[in-house]
Amino acid sequence: MSTLSRRNFLHGSALVGVSVAAAAMTPMAAAAAAPKKCRSVGEVFSMSEVEMAKNSEVVQSAYDTIVKSVKKIRNPSLRSTILNIVQNPAPTIARGDEAAIMASLKKAGLLNVNAKSVFPRIEDKTRSPQPFWSAPGSGYGSHHAYPGGLATHTALNVVSAEALYENYRHINNLDLDWDDAVGGEILHDLHKPWVFQWEKNHSCRVEQQLAGTGEHHVLSIAESIKRGLPSSFVVAQACAHDHPSSKQGEALVVGWLKAASIIA
Image 1 (cartoon, rainbow, N blue to C red):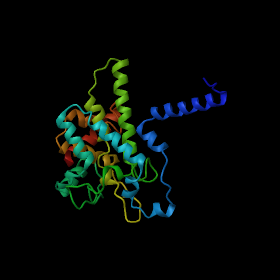
Image 2 (cartoon, rainbow, N blue to C red):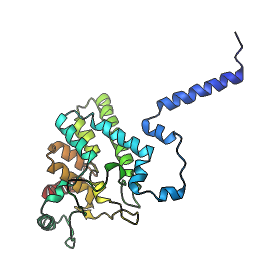
Image 3 (cartoon, rainbow, N blue to C red):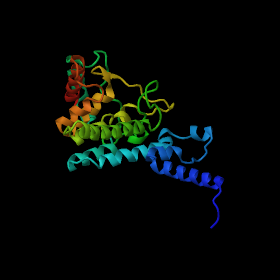
Image 4 (cartoon, helix red, strand yellow):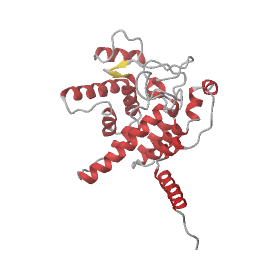
């Protein structure tokens, strides 16, 4: 039997360590660490925002993570609806009477009296203006403001919600609703592909305010109401921006739900 040298032993141990570390990586981390095709700045700049997100392994891995979480939703009807929305977050609420909705929102003090519209532009109300996975997580100057940022932002929130659910169940013995906790996070920003449409100059549309927050939040809640999702789910979704642990927080959540109900 040959003698294993110290150098070979250390080298072999290092390789094993790398293999174990790689195996322990999450899919998103593995995608980020994997070798990439080298692209020039000019090549990247020649891409559309949708092409950038489509060619990003990290973004696509994040989107896959979201879809896998959707498939864990326990209620079959709810699971089907959420999957349909993630695959095509079409703004069905835009079919409503915008003039009447705008008047009601202004009367309730939920929309600026000088506002000229409620809905972002949309040509085909049966289809999202872009895929869920190509939208930014927010506008420039805020979070995840890049093509595919919505997917990475949502994926992190969703896996965090799953972990919190399990931790509260094991440590505090709380019987929580998985579908509300996880599903509400999956759809909490469902209308960002509509609100943050990419412009021809490669900027994204500037978000407007609605009921004291970014319009995407209220429009997303309204979409869930319009599609008949359970009230407990809608409330969980509404609490993604704040929660009613104080009078101020409660007033905000109530305002968002009221505005969303008017729109839906």
